[in-house]
Image 1 (tube, rainbow, N blue to C red):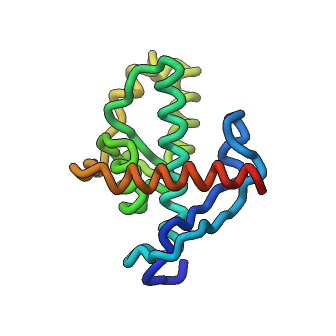
Image 2 (image 1 turned 90 degrees about the vertical axis):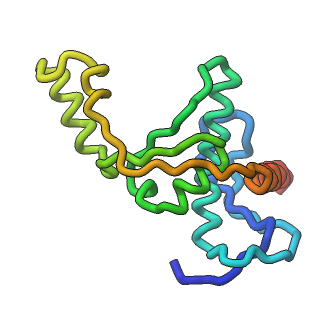
Length: 165
């Protein structure tokens, strides 16, 4: 992504495929720049996309908890996006819990190998596989949750406005 020194506050990216499984959200929402013009210094254009991923993850976790799942006290992450420290920081702030990146960020192949090993009796249970997981870095949420909460509420407003488009 090109380096940009500021992004308009209240500009949010709403990814169209992320809510296909949730009846709550308008599927056709794509990209929406909202109406305010107060800049967010130091926030690059790509950071808005990273923030959108964090908001979506928060939505899913809150939906799970409201459906009766036990509260999540730590989020363990892997995959390409987890290589970005900013992604971990924003996610920790949005959830208010620690986010720990796996030592193996690209775990698709490892997961396939684990499943094959389970099928062939190399490992006896998923609990045994869970013990093999190790974290690389843990990011704690910032103590002041107000900024994260304000950004999330503005993003929810942007989602709502996208429904009328």
